[in-house]
Image 1 (cartoon, rainbow over the protein chains, first blue to last red):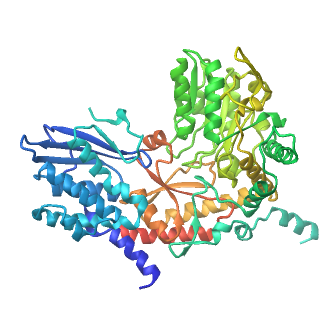
Image 2 (cartoon, rainbow over the protein chains, first blue to last red):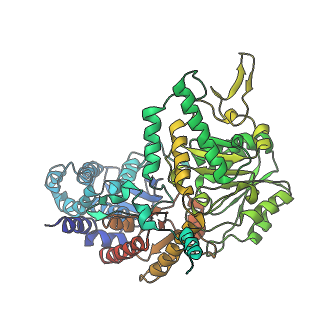
Image 3 (cartoon, one colour):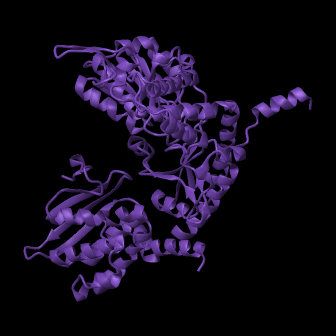
Length: 176
Length: 417
């Protein structure tokens, strides 16, 4: 394969149909009613923002999950896929999937390895989230793919804000 | 054509293709494609003359300045002060003492806000800014507003990104103490009517600070004929190194302003009871200054001075009009910033694609553009965009660069839409 073809492949791997589709038509792009927790993710360097809200049952299941915001195709698609895959799953599942996604985006885990980190019924979800692993060839875009996930972790941990930049947490951006 | 006419024509022609050879980085490829650098408004590339001057300063004449009684320190001092004189001549300041070296334009504006601002602003006073300012000409004024009780008033822009003098007239009034405005918008390329604003501001006794980061790059600047009170710019956008900026202010203003930072260099005498300040500009240059970056900036000014700057400006205007024309031919592209008076900076958006995605795809074609809010979030809010893509042109860009951008945009449409 020529170098030029490889580069086009990088781009088509990044902008797969599933990413473009979720980027254009994000699922669960809303604030959850009677949310038990809400957090905002903020990338102050590019201005991308996402608000993640969840309704968590007393036994630790995410009964409803929403993510709405503004940003590039990668960050919107990542948020959308996240809500699709994690709605109805437990908080523990969410933590495992977060680590799997982080690994796939930074290139430390391939999708097959990522599947071993989660319960078997989430393998299908990892297959879909593997679309995000295209960012591994684009270091400056990894933050786009992980923004909503950091906000989710903050949300479930009861913190109000997440940021992709250490030291940039902006209390005034926190949703009431 | 007579020999005299030919000579006159030679003096006003400018050959960007020859200029490209002066910039070593332009020979490299990115992602296997020739580099098409369209982000000079963020930071310009450096000619070899600048790199050589800095290397020579480090290799042959480096020591701290204004201190040592030995040859190297004397030579470093002479070179550092020679750079100050080059800047003076470049902006036509009255004397080198009016040139304060800072670490950048941001520090220059912070210096004015913190010293002039704190000494002169009080509750009821108004600071006038425009909607298109860079964060570095907004946030320092918010800090001093909060310290002094002054208020900030904002001049609105028009839909095309222009800021007519009538918009300033609506906001400048008897309470105005300072007007701080960009010479040229870093996002839209709009050239602001600085001379008219100066007249209006001075008529009510207000000072004018000009953020010249983009302005000084695209046209020659004469601070005396502009008539403003402060002019700030950075070295790295002017083909010089980073970590060097300039604040120009008239001597009497600098003398009346309290110091910015305390330390070595800026004092006359120090006891534990009290200290007295050095003369300007040393009063504002606490600590070891950016010696070699200043020498590099001097070399950048020397480099630029070999060209007829009017011819360079004409070349950049041609590039801009070629870019605006060709961009408007791409389906779905909307130009952002189409004011009548513009420098070679063009923002745009593509329907259905976020600017970051666009920039990523363009990069794989070797085309470097900026995407995002360009450190101008209030402007983005006023325009109704969260982000734009921006192509900005420098002395080394050619119409071939514009054409490469257009070809890459067509490819981006295929991938993203």
